[in-house]
Structure formats: structure tokens, C-alpha cells
Image (cartoon, rainbow, N blue to C red; front, side, top):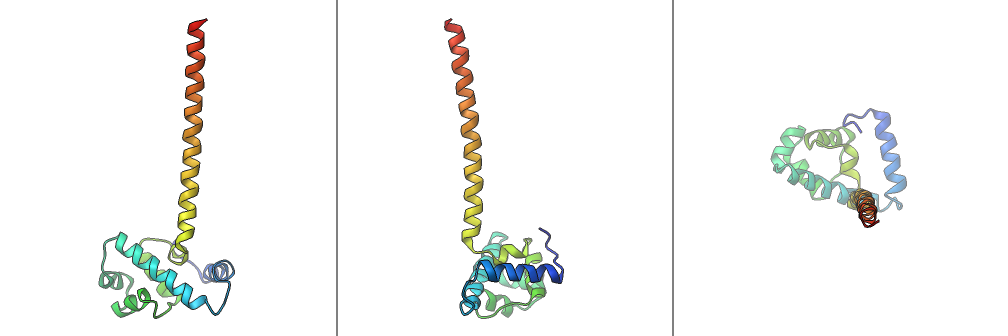
Length: 136
């Protein structure tokens, strides 16, 4: 998914988030702010940059970054895009709850384990066949 979104793509993203993540509209600002706050901080720390450096890179005020991380404010679509670019990530990753990442990671791990297990079984079968041939 590209970091640069047109207005229509942002509307679709907002609709998806409203329909699938926030079931109760009264809850939306609180939940959305917590998710954005957590993800913003996580991505910032991953890049080992300060709030001040993030603000500079995103061309917003340091106070705005502090308010977002403190769940005290929401952001415009332009600010969200600037933050995503500054954090070298996609917008949707800033808005997805941690459980979505965990589910994605768990699915990848399961697929990898299944693939490894299948390879081990094939190797065992081949070894057994070769061993039986030697005995006959």
C-alpha cells in the first residue's frame, strides 16, 4: 500500500475503520486516539527518534506530537499522511490496533511452521525409503 493517498482512498480507509474497528460511535474518539497514540510512539521508538525530531520531519509542532501521543487531540488527513511519511510507514499501520499486527504475525508464523513441518516430513519419508531399500 502506498504512503501517498488521494482523498478518495482516505475516505474509504476512514469508512473501513469506522465499520470494522469502532463499533460504537461514542467510543470512536477515545479508541482511535489510543490506537494512534500507541502506534505513533511504537513507530517513533522503533526509528529511535524523539518527539521533536518526528515533529520536524513531519513539519508539525512538537506540541502536536505530544498531544497526539497523549491522546489529547485527533489529526487531519494531511497530518496523518505527514506522520506516516516521517515514520516511513503506511497510514493504515498508524490506525490499526495491535491485535491486527499480532494476527498478521501469528498467521505468518503458522504458515512458516506448516511449511517447515511439511519439509521435515518429506525428508523423513525419503530417509525411511532409502533405509528400507538398503535392507532389502
